[in-house]
Image: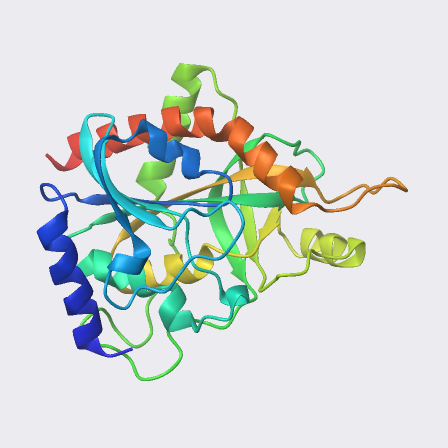
Length: 276
């Protein structure tokens, strides 16, 4: 991806958005309703942004929003791009580098995921403490020194301070949280029972088809990252009539979105307070 493409998209957005947001949120499958919590939002369809591709996945509206969440100016992607849609990794992660250009310092990512930890239930919220990447790495190819070094460290990918803040927020709100490792697969087929079992044995707690490419690029660019999954199905026991269904995933994510919106709003406020 040409460096000037990032600049062209960033310059366009700078003319459209309000203020100087420092935190961006990527809303995953079924979680676009969190956008309803963003006040005084400027809504920019992806098709209007130079060099953005189109979001074709179910439950992804395809808008960039800029407004206030928790009283703080934020940028939010109402839907993301996926490798399984046929996009190159540079296209999937393009928005993150544009965010870097416009001054974003913090990235909050969310997704719908299948639970492979047998203590997880549908509707649980899981803080992502680490990940296992089974997708092509988005940094493959010539390194763009504008953003970061050739070999970025990934030992503390998910910001430990932000994780502690979220755990305190959830405790105060009486919202139980899980914490675990997110396994990123290409999709678009759902996993077989054997695959669910395999990834659980190697340390995974939840599995999905997104998030990690964006996180890798964000860390390469020096952004601080927090991630959370909504557990939308239980991939550890299979009744005779069990099937994975995308509509069930979206439904479960939407039911949990209110809790996640509350938590994210408070986290954004506390992040703002820590850097002010």
